[in-house]
Image 1 (cartoon, rainbow, N blue to C red):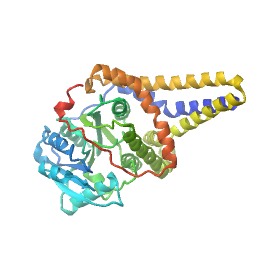
Image 2 (image 1 turned 45 degrees about the vertical axis):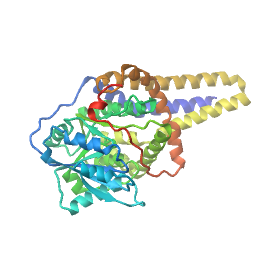
Image 3 (image 1 turned 60 degrees about the vertical axis):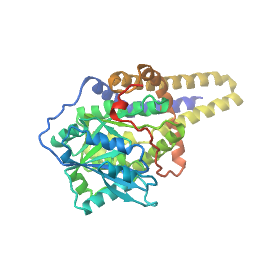
Length: 416
């Protein structure tokens, strides 16, 4: 019993020590916003889209790109139709995109598709000032590229954006994803930007200056979470990722638990891969240069949820052993486990609820669903524990997530 208490205290102290700085992020995200630079020049922007069987949604994305307030003659769209068995390529061409078709069943994943797309563009002599990476299920606010270009003109070479959702109100799963990304935008990246440290690229909706692509000789990040790998590698090279709070992107979130499990399994495995590949370099740079960005990324990719899993495993084992051999301790163990679970739930609920309140006007859902899904957000987050535990032992491969919510920007903005 005493040993169990010591283990629980150790894990609690570790989490407080490792993540207490995010309380500062929360306060900064609530009370202060980063300055918005003024645009000074027009840059030529290449929109890069890697799409696999996205015929149902890619047309709406391309329409939202064409409807930008940024001058259209400065924007070209390139699509890598990657191992498609539908008419993604034809739909994209009809909408005015330049399409390259790729068929490779061995090198599978977004990183390989980006490498292919950039290599094809270079071979055709298509060089741009910056490259905007999107997913086929995205939709862009009308001012998206205009706002990102302001950051580019201010000297930022890697820029990420505000990630909103096309389908917050579908169910508790899509809402769980949405709240996580909204929180990441407001209370991680916005706070990082305000404090002058590096932000993090999150999957889609990021812009990269030509000089970064040239320095890296194209795209060279191929782990299961190529976005986090790119972020960490860039920070280790001395780069800072900037955040543009006024560049708003909407994307589609999974609505079934099986799809969610598959996707988050890839993310969990990918973070483990990034930790294995870059963890030591982050630690050495942190020790040598006292880089807070390295510490932040180390905490981001560190498989801390494994400790949570072990805590649950040990407490569960203690309940079983007590029930079988020392029932006198059972009530106390159950009470402590229940209290710990309650504290975790309340912490996660407050995290989600604060995000809902602060982003209320930007969340495209009814007021009832916003409140309701604040209560289910902790459940969604707790399901990461078995997902990550499973990722430790299973071989995980990149698999596409089906997207079929074909909505215009106007339809997304109609609250449901």
